Image 1 (cartoon, rainbow, N blue to C red):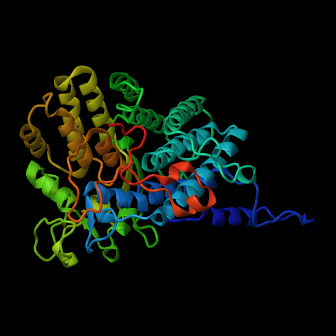
Image 2 (cartoon, rainbow, N blue to C red):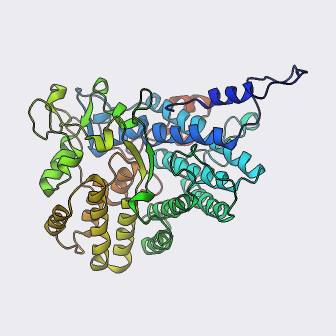
Length: 461
């Protein structure tokens, strides 16, 4: 299943459709122009889990947020030593491996009135395009995917991209609402064709993107909170609604975070992440962090110090990084913390408190914390107030969204979780990633001069 190439699937389809008695010499039987929606959906979902949720760009962002570290000396990504060429693969994977094939899926589904496939394609396009704009800012979309008609598409303004995200999700909800008879089955790795879950995901993503704009120029935090709360009323309702990719753990189908934290990579947990559990007296420490093999202690690595042996440091437990673990792309706990933040903006800390506590409770239940431990922890965290509410909500949201780009987005929006630049940092903590070198060579645009410390449009001062 893992890392299946769409091109292999296309060639397979060709083998079963090349039985014409007369061969048209202008047709290449190995490059069919038509393919079933199911053959497009499966590899698109796999590529999203592998390359969008947990691709190279995502790993770099985890270094910024000090959830992970590499057992290597400076310089490196971990102390903000980044070059344009480092992002070449991410751009290719997002635009070629994912977005292009999602467009093919959507066009095919719309032409054949397979509305459920069209709705899924639009939701996954919004998720992937949202990831692209949140790491690069202005990116091509409205002029993209035109092939020979436009090899050098101009970049859309980020505000326009955000409008496109909401439009895609609204169209997807409309598609699903048509109640088409044909639904995906096993080729839908995420929800197995449960269109009600897809619809709840669409509304949750709408809320996510509304909240991203709480301090964007020309936007009002209270208005965005209203929009988010309205969307969340129809969004995820339980942990079972999580958008997750379940890996089997078989050879070639290992979970993506299992490969990210493979000893060869030297990736392990950062000191900031591990010590946070201790500071909060958080019972999730033992559920999410492995003790160091050689010491039995919970020890994260401090970037900028001399590398030790891998056995001296902690790794994620099997919940997130086991060989057959799931990749959690969008969580119900995120929906709850979005609601808590929006409620804080609209109605204050006291009304946000029970929603915030439910976010903690649901994540703790998911990772196996007992009810008595949950009760004790909630008591230790105390009552939200005007002075601490946003910080507490974002701290807990980050714990519930391990290895997720949303933690970086939230830090840029709110300043929480509170972090400082690592030892030996080459700049302030980056606020974006660089445009890839291949794109700069083949499609030069003025935006490509951006530096890692430049702010995106929605990341206003």
